Length: 372
Image (cartoon, rainbow, N blue to C red; front, side):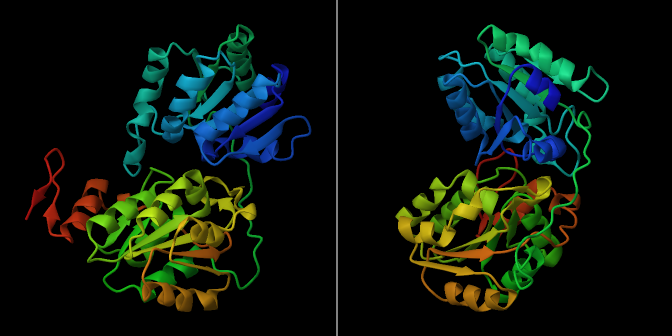
């Protein structure tokens, strides 16, 4: 695939990782002729690629279909009307059908080709039993030559995965996911916990499942806003948001919204291991971001930073006992056993229903909200 990109002149690739692209991204990070620019979300990746293309540099984007929604605005209001030719490689999670344990991929596994058809954007398929990656990229490159953007839709197994497991770079005392979740579960009482997509939700489920836990599968980057809505709606309850560095960066503006509305009953925990752990350990850009400083700047009442296992519980206790919104930035390391997804034994509608029921309400799929 990378040889195909070089053949059509691509010298810059921006993207957000997916496990389908684990090996290409690993090689791009040290490629001598193609620069890789990690982006906080798929729309930003497309804008980065469009900016470079405007100055004459052929570009490509790597994205997951789960984030296709983030692409829509810059695709339809920037790339298409300005006729900026960019190649977009999209992994097709949930295609042709979503796995039973990953219902969050059901819709995007079905709709991306139809949406591209509706936008009159040409696309090609790259599958395990189809033409070689360089041949597919070459075909898509013909559209770029005519001034049009093009997509390559990548099926599971089309690209070989030989990337090694990620290794943590933090010190020996730095906490991993298991340490964080254990500390949170030890300190919370009646507080509700909302956890971001990926390994944090898995670790929370396996470490201490309870009706007061809401596990996100998908919707990456939106757990802070989800927690804000819950906290504003139920000021008598207290909410803890478990976020990751990649997730927090994806929609960092949500922190400003939290700070503006300032719910006293919200504690926001950002676990920063500087990696997209569940997609293969690709680095995030959080190494140059101080989440605690950002929180203070946008109006959080409390903000702390901790980098040791021993410091976790005291820091959490202090924030749980103080008026929020509060943010705890945890300088952690890659590691911990993620275990099974919550959806391996609970349906996602059950996860939502039991969480809602705690607040004196019932939501039945397909019906309006009913007070009980």
